Length: 145
Length: 436
Image (cartoon, rainbow over all chains, first blue to last red; front, side):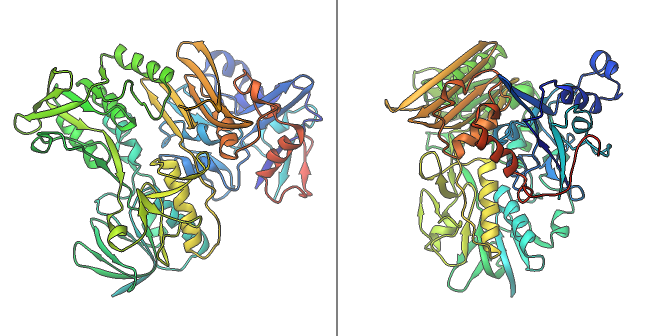
């Protein structure tokens, strides 16, 4: 499977990854519509910043994923094909237990439509995830097993 | 007589996660699951969502409908195990079926504890821990009803919320001086009480029910310790839960409050394991075994029990008292110690209005507890620091800051963490960036 690795020495804190993540997960995949006309999706990557240091962080798709074990409804599962940790919004009840246990703080509330959580899904429709593809300084890279 | 490589008593979080772990290691060993209920594995904590109409019955199931078949499990439903014989490695069900096992897991869960209140046994009261309980509650709330909930723990408050969603007029009586006295601290309890009161739920704290007078069926009148009386159409007893240890105890397995287990989830009897709400296992914050009757804890114990039953030798890492609940739109997350007693603890709180309240509890240089109400984003970072007993000396002052995250960790630790989850990938050679 693919994994996204942040390179903090290259991150310039521009947050383009957040913007492209939001657009990719919007209904229209159009930046203007996504920001102005539709229910704006949550960002599934977050730039952390302190002084001159910054990096972008999203779900690590952990080998031993605490969110999968802790999930009350069984919505959080590992996708057998891609190996990614995926939340099924149809089965998610919004109990926030995954938010309670994620060591990376990479799961967020997504209440735009229904009360569920959202997280990085590695952009299944794209060859390269939007955050990686749009990072202007290669501060997000893909590692493949 | 059937002989199973693995027999599992119970069909909830611990049982299913054990089953998954066994199958991940052993594709062919025979597995049997015994459940006294008629349902496929469902998520017990979701019964309040079901009653409130937030999910359908389909949403109750923890695994897909073909789960048992695809995992090659013999599912014995409505098959209560009444005794186990460790010497013969044999169990007997209520239907007189006898089955032998090579490894046995006791994932027997808990039962509601109903105190011996005068007259309560003559009243057709409800508990609120199973799907059948939820069905009864749904049936009883088809017409307007006055509901009395005794006990304002997690089960009691969620029952009150569900009853309210069904249009019932709800009163909650709690013996302690506030709701959720164990799971929350006083401030967070007050926030939950405010929400409940705003919805018209009556909250009576510091009083207990001293007696009940049945008026036939579900109806009756409760007498409170202050002399007042409350008439009810529905009585919900939610005072507490007790681990189900009776099978283990009758078989001579060591129990002290719960079924005792070692770090491999193994009981005092060879080849018998225990996990979940019935087992008493390591709480890393307390540094000793404790009962944490919580879904995520049960699931994790089940997983480790399963791995060890299938021949691995892996220690259960321990857990802590973690809760994630939402009451009338107010999410409240907590982990570890939220009500510290004594002078060894440092407590830092932060309040941003509109129900946003956060707190951390530090002992020496170790984070031992956290609570977040209203604003819960990234709570898991704190939970993981608690769980790992990490030294937080250098970041103590910024734990509740806006934007607190892995950025506040020392560089080397942060790098380790971010790459840690990518086990074995440190030396990965195929790296591609934006330009492929």
